[in-house]
Amino acid sequence: MPGGYRAAMLEGAIVQAFLLTTDPQRARSFFEGVLGLRFLSGDESGVEFDTGGAILRLAVVDSFTPQRGTAMGWRVSDVPAAVRELAACGVVFERYDGMDQDDLGIWHPPGGGNVAWFKDPDGNTLSVSGHA
Image 1 (cartoon, helix red, strand yellow):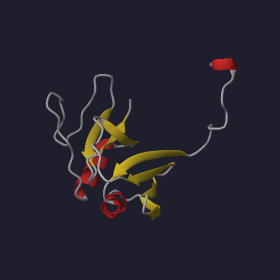
Image 2 (tube, rainbow, N blue to C red; image 1 turned 180 degrees about the horizontal axis):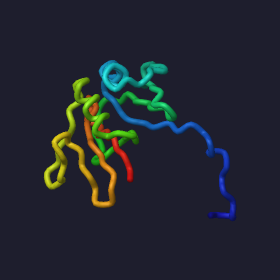
Image 3 (cartoon, one colour; image 1 turned 45 degrees about the vertical axis):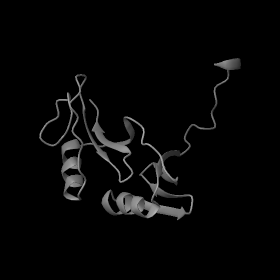
Image 4 (cartoon, rainbow, N blue to C red; image 1 turned 180 degrees about the vertical axis):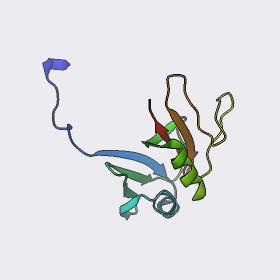
């Protein structure tokens, strides 16, 4: 650590995650209406949701290419139950070549745990996971 100091200002602060969207109304419909997140606010620059411990802000842009890999995920106590509930709400889970995913689309990594991926309407890859 430079100078031997450790910052304390961020300890206990609320985390804010950022994703991009080209259509805030469509994003709101998905994150609030399908995923069940509580809408906090919105304006011409973005929309915000309470994720139960962090704030998710979807910033409005004209265009973008979604990043490779998982952009954001939720740790849940029961991944199969979460996948079934989300699928019943219309969420489609991703399948990846070379990954041994079960019938629900859940991958069980060698070190334990499980994860399933889905995309938001802008193509951001999201996940639900449980860890060993």
